[in-house]
Image 1 (cartoon, each protein chain N blue to C red):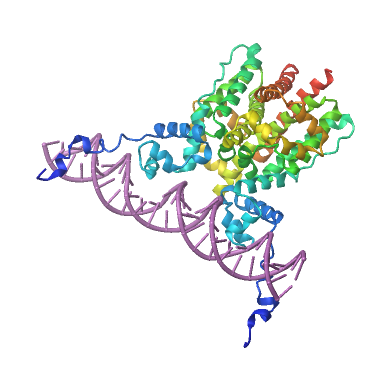
Image 2 (cartoon, chains in turn yellow, orange, red, cyan):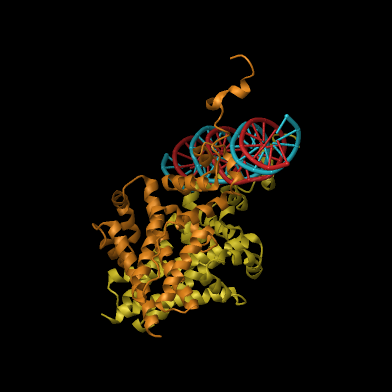
Length: 241
Length: 241
DNA sequence: GCGCAAGTGCGTACACCGTGCGCTACGCTG
DNA sequence: CAGCGTAGCGCACGGTGTACGCACTTGCGC
């Protein structure tokens, strides 16, 4: 022992330099992990800090505040989207449908995105959002839309997908919170539904016609149906000019 | 003074029975007011209680928890929707378009709804939601859709409108938080936008073509464009059978 | 090699949140 | 008048976002 312990203390006791050094990228990607695992309401600066082996307020050196973190995180997952290259005009419809499916499945992979879209806007300045907007716009231009209309057409498709995904994601996270299976959950609620639906024969029949089917498949079919209608409408517009 | 003050005390000093009596309806409608005035992040049980002249925790006698309150509040504003009666099939398109406009303008009147849709789902059991779903379904059935397809068609239209409204509402609340005018805000951001958009000529031109126009009008036109495409797609489907 | 500025992490603190619990006071039924 | 059910409330607990100032490390100019 003896003597001034401070300088010795040794490499081992000293807290590894002064932490491994945080970075914005690290923070954002750990936040995505946390969000995927526990949902939006479980994201707190403290918990995220702990996960990174850092104190709660250390994150503020790299991120202005929680809202900014959420914007970063939202843009991050937009980076997962796959938008095909603009090829021949004939492939336009398939390419657009592919992008739409990619967007939907991203939103279902990260259901918390849906609860964040209403705060964060959709198309704002994040590099990944911009890149994917640009690529989609290229798709529509190559199909024959003039720039202004291409923008409107793209927005329409995105709006449709976001709308579907919002409602699906909300539904799925509700189920996830209950800890049950999608099927179990529907069975558990069926009596309540029956009662609520009593006065509305149309809704009742609608519900009845889904019973017994695979809910995930039904959701997918509904998505495709609407997407086809949107694309039909756009295609008609295209061949009119 | 003198004597046992209790029974006298008089109607005036006595704290008005024991408060005016809260009710679920009162709570919900005051919550809507608060949300409209200050946005979603300003809604707290304490603040809402105070506004109602009640203690914070008194609300829990009428509402299970904050999440349930939010579900109630969401259903409440769905009650503002106007869905025309199902009349002759010819009027189907106009009636649907009317419903869509009604939904969009509700969402812009109450921009917080957008940030709540991702948590609350859309179509779940609230009486107002059910009533409006039923009426819209009637619209599609009277147009000639079979029940199952009517349901898909309705969902498609709603998804589109929700998607547009989500992004518009997020955008508008962002501006509202900044305290600026929509136009001022866009000007304040224009240099940032220009920089972000530098590498993407398509996005750049798209932005450029909007400059100087009335932003609210642009948003409305974009909405109508997409809605027309969706309705075109549905109408085509209808005349094919 | 040294000293200093810039940048990073963290402990503390504050104001606020949702909500469980148990007490009180009222209005109603018998 | 007794008693009971119910509504409101004060308090407390554990959690939140984040401002602030201190301690330390790192990198750069001499």
